[in-house]
Image 1 (cartoon, rainbow, N blue to C red):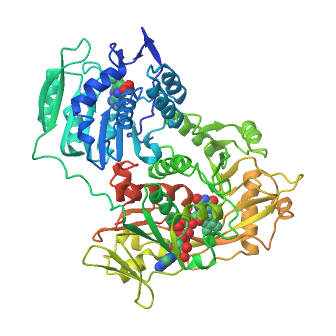
Image 2 (cartoon, rainbow, N blue to C red):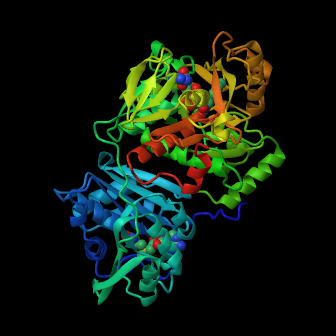
Image 3 (cartoon, rainbow, N blue to C red):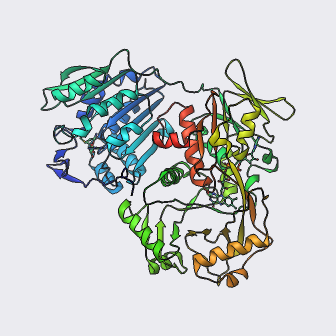
Length: 620
Ligand SMILES: Cc1cc2nc3c(=O)[nH]c(=O)nc-3n(C[C@H](O)[C@H](O)[C@H](O)COP(=O)(O)OP(=O)(O)OC[C@H]3O[C@@H](n4cnc5c(N)ncnc54)[C@H](O)[C@@H]3O)c2cc1C
Ligand SMILES: C[S@@+](CC[C@H](N)C(=O)[O-])C[C@H]1O[C@@H](n2cnc3c(N)ncnc32)[C@H](O)[C@@H]1O
C-alpha cells in the first residue's frame, strides 16, 4: 500500500437543531443564521460578486470545503439570475469527506428556496461516487462546471490546475480544522490565482489573517454575518497572480489527426464546448467508423492496484468521466453499464486482490470482492477463485460509438504527412504532395504510433518517451451465443476477456502478436483466445471451439509506450499542438479522459485531473 494513498471516508449526515453538523469535527456546515444568506453575504459579496463576473467570458471560483454544496448552489443561482453574467462559471472545490449521493439528495429536499432546491436536485443527481481524485460535473449545458477535488486538502491543493478569480475559504473552525487554514494551503491558492484574485471567509481569526497575508494577500475586515461581528476579505497583492488564460476564439477550429477512439473522443469533447473540428484520416474513405469495422464489441473496464497506482487512477477517472460525457449518445453508441468481473488467477491472487480491496476501502458501487459462489452467480458462469466486481464496467460497440462521437466534425479522408507553423500562429496540415489540406489554430495528434513520424516530418523535437512508442497487433474472436450456449452476464476479464452476448454473438479477446507482425485474424489467434476463455469461465476450450465463428473476428493495432501510460497534453516547443496517443489496450477508458484534458486546456478551463498525473502522461 502506497504511503500516499488515503482512503476517502464519506461524511455521515447529522443535524443539530436543523443545521447539518459534522460529528468528527464537532462543527456546523454553515451559520445557524442561514446557509444561503451566509453564502451570499460572506462568499459572494465578500468577493465582489456578482459584479466582478460581469463583462467577463469566464470566471473561476475556488472553494476550500464543499460540504453540502450550499456555496456552490448560491453562486450558481446568482449566476443564473444575473442578466449580465459571464458566459461560463467554473467552480473548483476541495472536499476530504464528501457526502454520499443519497445524503446529497436528502440535503437537496431541505433547501428552502424553490429555485435553489431545483439546482440542488440536479447536483444530487450528478453527484459522483465518493472515490479519491478529481471529478468534473457540468450543468447548464456546460456553461457551469464543477470540479471536485476529493481527498485531503493537504494533498489535493497542490494537484489542482486552475486559474482562480475568487476564493471561498470555508473550512470548519480553525481550532478544530487547522489543515483548512494553513499557510501552506494559502500558498497553493496563490499559485493558482489569477491576477486580481480575491478571497473571503466568515472567519476573522488573527492566525488565519496572518497566514493569508504571509501567503500574498492584502487582508481586510468587513461586517460579518449573523452572530459574527466581523469577517475577512482579501485581495491578491498586485505583483502576484497569473494573467487570465486565453480561450480559443469562438470562430477558430481545431484539426484532429486520426479518427480512432482518441480522435473521435477529442471531437466530441470539443463539440460540447462549442469548438469546431476537422478530422483527417484515410480510413474515413470507408465511413466514419471504418477503423472498427468488424470490431463488434469492446470492454471499458477499470483496473485496480493495491497501491492505487497511476494506471488505476487514470482508468478510474476515465471510466467515470465517460459515464457522464457519453451518457447522452444515441442508443447504439452509448456504453452499456453491465459490470466487469476481474477473475482471480489462483488462490494466491484471490487473497492478494481481496486484501487490496480491504485496504483501499473503495465504495461498493466502484469495486467489491465476490467469492467463488457470488462470482459464479453474478457472471452466470463458474467464477473460478472469485474476483473483483466493478459495477461500472461497460460494454461498448466501437463502430457506432466512433461514428456518433465524430458526427459534429468535418471529416476529410486523407492522411497528414507534415505540419507547418504559420507566422500568424496557425498550423497548416500538408498532404503527401506537400499541398495544404487544412489550416487550423490548434492541432490534436491522435494518430497513435504514427505521431512521432508526423512530428519529425514537421520539424518537431524528438521526445525520448514518445519516440519509444511500439505498435502491437492483435485480434478478437466471435462466438455464437444461442439459448443453450452459456455466455457471461457481465464482462469476464483476467488474462483475456469475454463480453456478454449481443444479438446472438459474443466477442472474446484478445491476442498480442509479436512486434512487427501485421494484424490479421488467424486460427492460431482463435485457439489462443479460446484457451484464455477456458481459464476465465471453467468451460473447456474444446466445448467453446464448437461455438467459434472462425471466418469472423477483427484485428487491429495497439500503440503503447514503454511505461504503459498514454502520452497526453501539449507538445513541448510546438505551441498549439496537443498529443493524444499511446493508449495500449485501454483506449476506451483513457481516450475520453485525454479528450477532456485537451479540450479543457484549449478552452482555458480548470483541469479535470490531478497535476501529478498530468505530468506523468505529458509528452516528453
Ligand atoms: C484485438 C484488440 C482488442 C482490443 N480490445 C479493447 C477493449 O476491449 N477495450 C479497450 O479499451 N481497448 C481495446 N483495444 C485497444 C484499443 O483498440 C486501442 O487502445 C485504441 O484503438 C487506440 O485508439 P487510438 O485512437 O489511439 O488509435 P487508432 O485506433 O489506431 O487510431 C489512429 C488513427 O490514426 C490514423 N492515422 C495514422 N496516421 C495518420 C496520419 N498521418 N494522418 C491521418 N490519420 C492518421 C489511423 O488511420 C487510425 O485510424 C483493443 C485492441 C486490439 C488490437
Ligand atoms: C464548513 S464545511 C464546508 C461547508 C460548505 N462550503 C457548504 O457550503 O456546505 C467544511 C468542509 O471542509 C471539509 N474538510 C475539513 N477538513 C478537510 C481536509 N483536511 N481536506 C479536505 N476537506 C476537508 C469538511 O469535510 C467539510 O465538508
